[in-house]
Length: 75
Figure 1 (spheres, one colour):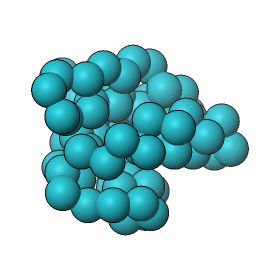
Figure 2 (tube, helix red, strand yellow):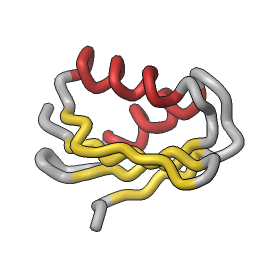
Figure 3 (cartoon, helix red, strand yellow):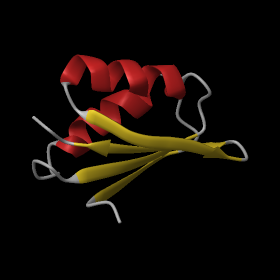
């Protein structure tokens, strides 16, 4: 289970990333943030976000039109 859950469904780029960045501030190092989004571009956005911030994209999947990302805070 994630330390924090961010519901970013219905938001378009760049809002899911911006809200995730803010939410990660309250996640402890080595903790996880689960993000739920409906923007199809969020898949590439979260991959790039984790690459550039040094956090780990532990997993991502899709159920219907909802994308789920699990990010491990490493920095």
